[in-house]
Length: 142
Image (cartoon, rainbow, N blue to C red; front, top):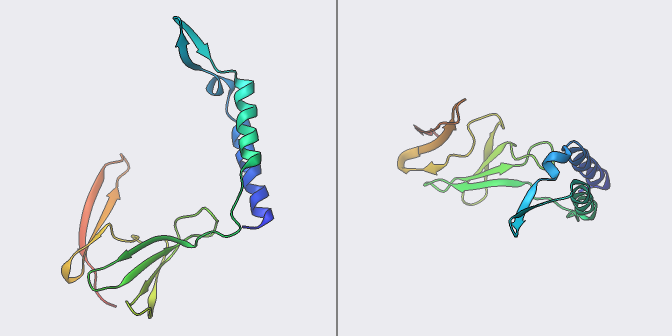
């Protein structure tokens, strides 16, 4: 992780913090002797700002975001996307001995949630209402 990326991430997080209204930073945190106790939004903002400024970052980030192995031993490796925190990169396929088979685009179906015999694969899809559906299909070597 470069100094530029660290600086940009800190600035983004500080901007996000400043955008939070005081009402959301304050609020009731408990009751003592029947009296509500409220968090001071100014103190809470200062506490969060200090935590953001004191956050330490690793110099290196993993490029692997997902890993799976099919029944036939094919290794599926999801790489990170363009940004350091991006989880939606391409998927590389490798044989058990490490031979590169190819890559699937980031926009594709992704790594299956489960693999079955004979090339079966289960994917979990979420519709616009948040309803999750399991879709089973057969993967063909190609």
